[in-house]
Length: 219
Image: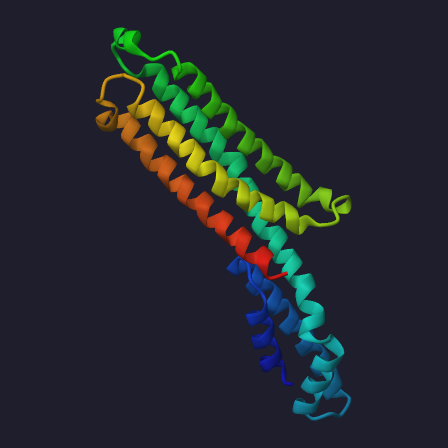
C-alpha cells in the first residue's frame, strides 16, 4: 500500500474534531514520507520505499485506536471548556436580568411560592454542570495518569449535556412564563439579547455533546 492510500484509509477510520484529526493524519503522512525518503536514498524505487515505510508503520487496525483515543480526549476537553465558561456566564447573565426585571417591584406580589425554589434549583444545576465541565478538563488533562478509561469521561460529559439541557430549558420556561410576573419579558430588550446568547450557547453545547457521543462509539 502506498502512502496516499494508507493515509486516506487512516482518515476514514478516525472520527473527531476536524482540526486535530487533520493534524494527526498530516503527522502520520510526514512520518511515512520521511521514512520513505530515507529508504529511497538507500536505493529503493519510490513505490517500493513507500510500501516498506507503510509496512513498518503498522496496520491501521493497530495504530487507529491510539489516534482515536487522542481525538476522543480532545472532544471531551473542548466540551469541558465550553461548559466551564458558558454555563456560569449564562447563570450570571440571567441573574442580572432578574435583578432588574420587572421594573415595577410590585409585580412580584403575585409571585408563586415555588419561584425561589425553582430559581435556586436551576442555578444549582447549571453551576454543577459547569463544575463537572471543569472536572472533565482535569480528568482529560493531568488526570489521565490516574484515569484508566478517559473515554468514559468524554461519553459521560456528552450524556450529561443531553440530559441537563432539556431539564434546564423546562425550568427556565417555568420561571419565565409560569411565575405570574408581567408577560412583557419576551419583549424586554435585555431578555431578548440574553435569549439569543443562551440559545447560541445551548446549540454549541448540544453539538459538542453529540460529537462526544459519536467519537466514543468508534472505540
